[in-house]
Structure formats: structure tokens, C-alpha cells
Image (cartoon, rainbow, N blue to C red; front, side, top):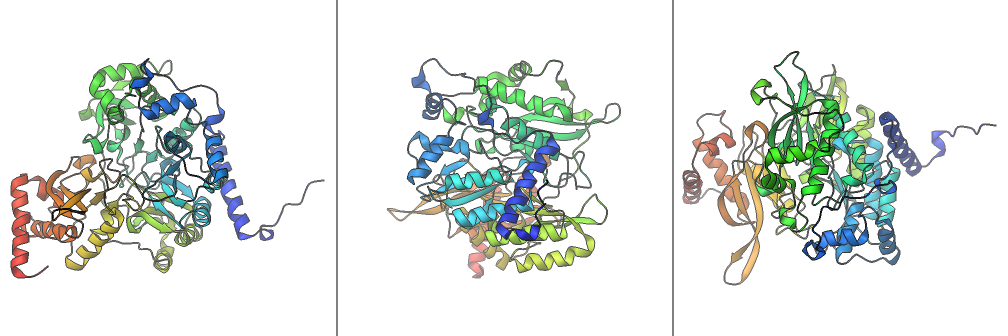
Length: 591
């Protein structure tokens, strides 16, 4: 006798959320014809491209060799949770393989980093993360610059509960930290963008599941980033990744769509991914990326953490030398094709703040809305409100972006006003000033032990101050990062700030920043150059105001952007203009 199908009304709200998340994860797996299995259950081992003398290895590499494989740390997490204690020594590093970061002394707690391939999640998953954050964390989540989520303020007894809860939601975050491949990013408007060349969602998902199911994709010499850009209005910032796939239409033959392969992006080390001259067909992207990772695994430096990224392998072997190593790992029959850049059409233009506000989709009568989050932070209640909006007015899809905000897609034209009211009722914005639309800040010293300043708080103070003082008619990106790791990528901001300790008086040190200008990405690619050093956090808002006033007074036309303005002037003249504007403002008594 068949058991009766339970009526949905028989379940509590909590049970409904659990079942929705489980169904969503199972449905995704079925659509890919592959189960979201954990890499730790599979055979194989991490290659061992290391010096014979273990003493030359970094402590992290020694820990990996001693433990066997960083993926096999579940019992380590169980042990610490059972005892209610935080890890010490290299156990801190090993627990990152499960996505758990002990972030003392900034917080005496864990941060859990998740994984959403292409930044896309379901409303059920979003609700589930909100529930986990409220039950076991600080009651909020942070949207990161890898189109991802983090849960913070997790106690030592709750780590296993959080991880099991995530897995039950279909969120498999193994390898989200440590020397592994980070969240695979892609165009946030993939599949809905009127100008895109190709939908990158399936590529991001397939790359994600390939990583989960191959142990050799873990335990690399250092962390690794992969991104797919489909040519849409909102960039994936693929040129800041170790591997960037940039969609192009070739001028040869029928004008097929390929991806140009770029390698070695790491803007914190002042380098963008460089074009290899190689084009890759969409169905070849995953095996090519896997071959690049394997070559990096063999040749990466395991004796110096500062030189362990792919950039330094490329510097050592040269691009041609490294590509030869990649070719050794390609599947039989796959050969790399080279096509000159001039034989490809230029990428469609990027909308600098296209991740904010309402925009028409390629599907007639539908729109997506870019929701503005205060430097990426969102409460559990707001997450539930957004999930409800996505369900009632959209398709139940939420898209995280590298700009620390999110998109809700598939909104009918006649529901736009309803969505506006719902967002405002949740305390969230669907529009932003030119200043706030491109405001990016890393976690800062409120939650990261490496940071030298409270970047999120200072970013909000800068935005509020500038909005009260002036109006900009051109979009601008302001990035605040707390340390040289540059998680907020200060080098690619129109204005970038990197935190430092600033001496005040003979003994005191206060939080402050070095200030850069002129960074960009994509067609505007370039690294920012320093214009001011040791600006205190208290002085930063007024300093940036005077910079922007110098721009407004000195631009050649209303169409000239801040980026174009600073790039056409040499640094010494630029600083003179900024300081002259500062002196003029002080003389007038207007601040």
C-alpha cells in the first residue's frame, strides 16, 4: 500500500524551509545528471610537487603532508565542536578546508564561507542561510566580492550544525577556504542579459561540480580563482582571476562564440590576468581549466606563501612554457587554438553600475532589480523578505554579485512598483547615488585579523558624508580594503583605499588609509596609483570630497568621468589640483 502524500499544510514553517532547500539541491543535481557528492568520499590523492626536504616547506604544506589531505578534516571539526573549543596552530588552517575560519583576534568566533556557482542561489537556500545565521551565528550574512555569502560569529559548538545545515540545503562548501579553488564566479546577469554573447550559468555549475568531485583540485600551492564572463552588461571581473574566460565573437568564418583564455590575475600583487592568445570553445572550458589547475599544482611554489600564486609560476616559466605544461594535462584529442585579438570583435560595453536598479531582461516583459546592500551586509529578516519577494514576484532566483549586492530576476513589468514598495519596507534600496552604487568594502578589522581598519564602517561614513556634500552625475567606484590581501581590490577602484596605521603625535597610532586613483577593469583595465599616504579615517571623507570637487571643477566636459580625468593628468599635477582644491575649500570656510 502506498503511503499518502503529505499535505504541505501538515508541516511547520521550519520544516517547509528545510524541505524546499533539500528539494532545490536535489533538483539541481538531477539537472546536471551528477549528484553533489563530497570530494572527500572519492579516491585519488593530491599530487606531491614539493622539495624532498620537508624543512623547506611552509607550515601549511607541512600540515597538509602530515594530515594526509585537507579534505579529510571532518573528524577534526567534530572533535572541536564536541569539546566546544577553538583550533590552534595549523588546525586553524586545516579547518578552512571545511569552509570554517577561526577569525580571532578580530572575533573570537568562526566565519563560514559558502559556495554558490555563478553566485546563483534559490530563495529556499537564501532562507535557509538566514535561519542558520540567526540560530548559530550573528543573525546576518555578508555578500562578498566573489558573489558569495559568509556567516559570521559562529560559536565553537555550532560548526557541525552549520555545515550539516548547509549540506542539507544543497550548499556544498568543501574547500571554500585554504589552498583551494574559491567560489566559481560568472556573469551575474547570465541568461537574462539582452547583450550577452553566451549564458555562463551552466559553465559555472559544471566547473563547481568538477571541483567537488576531483580531489586533485584541492590542496594547491595557494588559493585559486576562476571566472566566466559572457559579455553581458555587468562584468564578472574575470581579468582579476587566476583563470579568466572572456566570451568573444570571432571574425573568422561564421563568427562563432569562443572564450579567450586569460591567466594570472591577482590585483593585490599588481597584476591582471593576461591574454594567452588562446580561444576555447564553451564545451572545452572545463577540461582546459582543469589542466591549468593541474599544471599549477605541479609547478607552484610550496616554500614561500607570498610567491605561491599562479602569477609567479607564469613569471618563472613564461606563458609559453606554462602552456606547454598545461597541454600535458589536456584530454586526448583536445588541442589549444590560437586566434589573434584583432580577429575577435570587441566585448559589448559594460554598464558600470548595471548591478543596481531595474533593468529589462532579454525575456520580453521581464526585469531584474539590483538591490543595494550596505557594504554587503544583510540581516536574517531582510534575507527572508528578499526570498519572499523573489518567490512572489520573480522566479525564486537570487543572484549574488562581486559588487557585494544581489539581483532578483524575472519580475514582470506590472509588478515593478510592488517590488519597490516591498524592498523599501524591508529597509533596502533599489536605487543608489553614483557614490553608493560602486561602494565596496572588505570585512575590515571588525571581523578579519589581517585588517588594519574598520573598512565597512568607514565606507558607510564616507558615503553618507559625500552624499550630504555633493552630487555626481557620473558613476564612480570607491573600494576600501583592510590589508595587502586586497579582498576589496583597491587597485581597480576609481578611488581605492588600503588601510594602514597612521602615526598621530609622538606615540599614538590611529586607523587610516593610503589613497589611490585611476584603477579600472575590462576595457578600462589599469592599476590605481597612490596620491595620498597616511590619511586618517576621520579625514578620509573630507579628503575624497576635495578630490571629487577638483574633478568637477577641472573636467573637460560633463561627459568626462573621474577615471578619464585622473588618467589624463600626471600624478604630481593631480595631487596639486587636489591640494589646491583643499586649500580653496579651507580658505572659503566651506566643508
